[in-house]
Amino acid sequence: MAPPTESGEALLPDLTALFTALAATSAPGAVPLTPLAEPWQVQYQGRFRRHTRPAPGVWTAETVGCPKCGGKDGPWTVTCDWRQATLGCACGVVSREHGLSLSEIWLVLPET
Image (cartoon, rainbow, N blue to C red; front, side, top):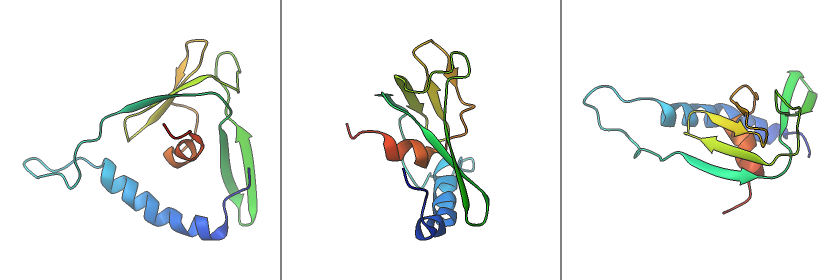
């Protein structure tokens, strides 16, 4: 997997603002701008890679593993409530501490 490009990275501030607005709760009595989104769940067999940029021009990638059994290939049960994604391992552990962003998970999931 190639690291994000500079043009892709330039989109991140706008995407962050968009996802923040979509996840924000409305003021009491206000009509939400978007309809409520139902949580979704999907099964995924494979690895998740988390990319970070510790310094300009430097990218690192780390394979996410289960905090209990260390498994990295799944099968994973991916659950998303549009604010937070959880990874469920075959060993039964469910984790929100994987450090992945929703966009990283979204890009690797197969179309259903």
